[in-house]
Length: 510
Image (cartoon, rainbow, N blue to C red; front, side, top):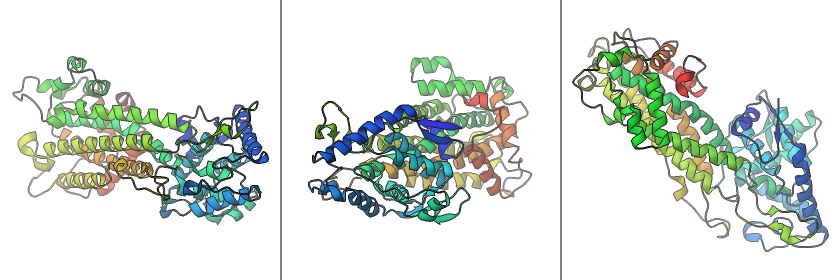
């Protein structure tokens, strides 16, 4: 399978197909004309002896320093070597590959002045399964993800280290030689084009979006299971309520609840009970889960635009009939504020889904509020039942909250005050990536507790809830007495992270 990159039409799904090795990436034939035109523009500026930032000047605070044309290759190589100074643990392979594909697609837009062969080398490495070793920390989310992308660019020059598709580490020069490839000598503008973009931020955001696109609908189905376990009311999902306050997210969640509880014998059995209203974590769930779904939609829109944008600086706008330095325009498309703010918003939304989930767990485990056995134990007192499952969820929320931010409120000036405001978008995106994984842990805790609560009902649950219950029971057996649930909790969380493969559940996740 091949994905064509043209800088304008790459989807999140296609990016992940390349990142996970399911598909190869190729340069679209239609994109090559624009790429070549921008390259000729750069070459013309050099041949005419004109001065343009990023082509024959220094960088950042050194932008007023002109560089002799004989040293422009050295300028680009020095840029990469000096900027490849990330710290911390190495990024995982899939996010690095996503970062490479995002960068290549941006360069294919034809505004960067980089040769086709340089872009092709990124794709060669992707398609051969050669992944640069990239330290995680170093980007400020403005001037692009300079340090991490420099580690990628270093391998194009035949330097640094790579991991092959079998997980073996190699010096890049050896890995290239093993595949009959030679290091590329960068020319004017090319080093800057390779590193001056938001590709690391995009990689984590795209993966996080994919995870959350599975988890948020699942959170609604798990919520529905908790409603059934509590013998909660279906009335808060009445369509009339959400028509009266027509936010699309809360209407979507309410509709999911209604579908999940369709044909519920549990609901019918307590239709005439004396309970008036359920706690907010049940009754107001559409008004809490709904906004998170809207933030996720916004995140997807932002990612899609950014994936198909030129994000380096300066940008090249060729005018073949009117050549000159005016074809090179300095700007700030490398600034990751739009991504950082959206990541911060999504991170907050993830926290809210996790927080309200834990409150439902607490209600179900409290016999005074739920009417169920204390902590859902078979012999409360002698046994602790599900008590510590909630503790684990609370600890996970504490871990999630430590990463909450907002990261965009923290900016430090760099490069002698030339780069005096940064977005911290990479940090925001990394923490969202972590939070998405924690959310799977927390939802697995609620699912286990809610399904155990159903064991104390004689009546059949709603269709969607019953489908989830049966799926959970393939991984987590009912309690017959106290036992360690750690392994089963981890198995269920991984199942949630990988997207539930049970087709009986899918209709209730739409």
